[in-house]
Length: 228
Image 1: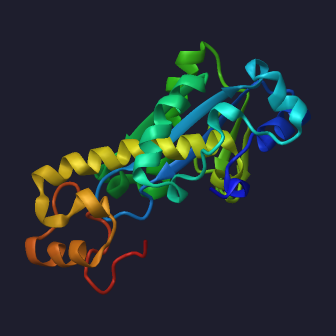
Image 2 (image 1 turned 90 degrees about the vertical axis):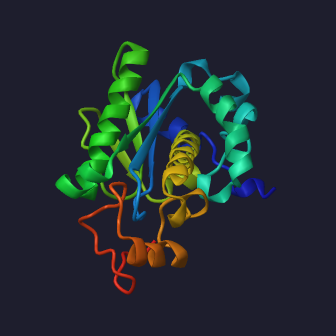
């Protein structure tokens, strides 16, 4: 394993040093470019006051208990599944929430992502019994529009451990949902493409027509589908 691409707590620790934050929430989404299924947002909260001493003293930001977690796209499906229990065990709070295709159609993708993110944030606030101190959000745009401070970070899912953990939980949850839905609509191959625009999926849309799980407001024509 190339350890250099594993996420660490260096972004969280640097943010805590600047702001005095204790509860930092990493936020990431999956399913943004899919043709079918929800857009899904994961949040993982790390309590920086409860970290092992060696995490702070090493200067590397490596937390041995979660060393090896990285952006979900860089992990195999079995690896993501293996990491999920450890992430849930070591997080102070976590949540995964979805916005359905109908919400995406009615409000637009960015608004749908924000709705799912705020629902996940409300869940972790309930778990904590208080708001988080700060959010690290993957990307360069603040689509979550939360009432707590947000730091956007390009490729945060490859740098920040809390964001990488959130991406893993969101990916496992959404992939499981799409695999379940594949049982209802086997012709679209969602168990393998997870709702993204594979050639077989696009061809099936043309021959079978879209389902209620497709994003009806998107151009689902074979030659003009949104890119992945």
